[in-house]
Length: 314
Image 1 (cartoon, one colour):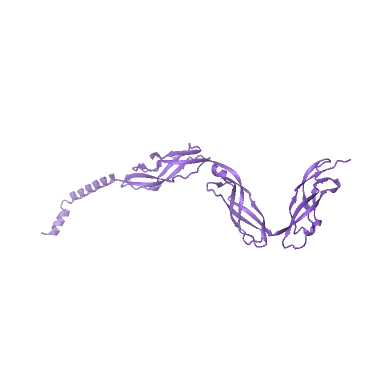
Image 2 (spheres, rainbow, N blue to C red):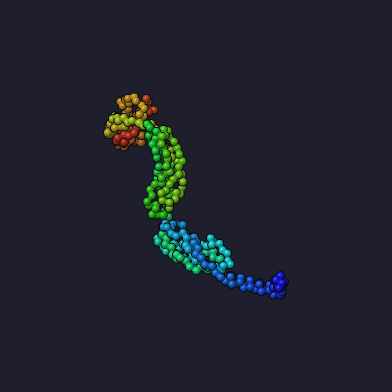
């Protein structure tokens, strides 16, 4: 037997009929394969629309839900386009349970079916958004250089407006700055720093950073004084009570000379809007002699205010 002739006849005899049969078989296979469906579980994101501006979700909720989809095996799709979209236009403050149905699944291509949703309800806690002003608290870490101290820390602005859910806002009284390291410093400085709110649900409305001025000075020693009070102008001959005050005046520790307290005195100053017979409360001040003005500073006066009476003419 001539095998070559046999194979040639097998392939070429009635070739048109054989080609038609192969084509019909392929079409039949394609039709059957196209009718087969593929089923799989897909995690899709949860999205909210029409959220009222004055409300906020404050609890942890599932950011994704698993849905079971089926599609023809021949259909190609981008599963990342699917999303579970929930309309919150009618939401109110409090706890609410929102259902997830097939109607919530968006961007489903033609030919794809939603066979099931594993989590059909999501619990949400909704709170009203409020605003309030809180004090800025600078966070100072470290110690100045030996022999130096912090005299003052100023913050600009000293207050900021924050917003967030009511429950978070009630617990928050300050906005703290990031850490400001003063370790080893012996001079005053200024630094721009960012603010930090411990509760991540709160937001700063009007400033994300503040200017902090740290005043560093040499350590000081205090000198206690008991001073006679004078009324200025003296020609009014006003009566003051009490007539003596206790004052504390400080000087740098490097200033070793003795402070002559007898050269200091306390005084009150009468303005032009007082009349004979009036009794007014005025702040007590301390006069610092010229030789001490570059080193001395008044720390306190007790009592801080004095009662002054203007005598009536006789």
